[in-house]
Amino acid sequence: MKLALRLPTDEENRRLLTHAGLAVAGFVVAWLLVFFLVFPDDGAAGVVTVPAVLGMTYDDASKRLGDSGLDHALGESRLSGEAPKSTVLAQTPAAGSRVLRGSKVTLDVSAGQERRTIPDVVGKSRLGAEAMLREAGLQLGHVTERSSEQARGTALSSQPAIGQVVPAGTAVDLVVSAGPSELAMPDVVGYHVTAARGTLEQLGLTIWHVTFDSMSTAPAGRVLEQSPAAGTTVLPGATITLRVAGKP
Image (cartoon, rainbow, N blue to C red):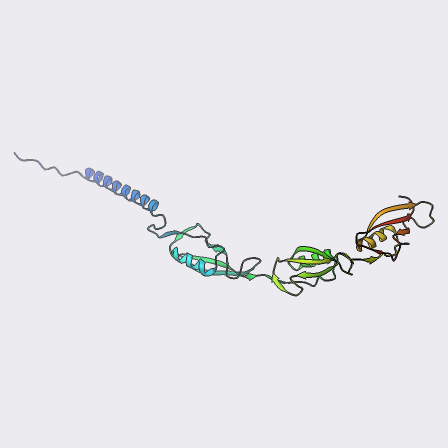
């Protein structure tokens, strides 16, 4: 008995090839998914993650990038208020970016800290000295008082000293005058009470009490009498009494 050998038809061949192709494609897709999940930084295309190098020195950052399979390039160099010279200020692409192995990361670095010169504030009022420091790109630090023949609040010295070159934003300490340890009571009789107050307060003296003389023929507000009397030795902070023409 002879067996009849039947060859597959063209339609059956096409179906077989289609199923085989789908099976191979599915296997390849599954393999790629597993490969990228298990080896996310070592894919077929050599994809790596850019490490964070901000705040590192340029040399250390270059080494970190090289260890990650990346190249580096020097970008912009600019002055910085805080970062020392050669510190990395910015990187492109940013940390966490996914790039091809061997890609170049551009690093912007510090050219050094901005420098400022301590201005001459001696003899200036505290407010004037503070304004000069601010204009020079510096900050006011601690302020201490010391007895001096200079008017109260006058700047006597600074630390760092005048003329020194320091980083921008440096805090500058001031020593200001607390006024003389003893002083002669000034003569404010005949002053308007507002001018008398300013003169006394500049010396560290305080008007404690003001009485008004409505019967006086002097212009209103004119100081008629003072206590202690002019020329009397007083201490800073002493309180003064004035008698003033006019009504309260």
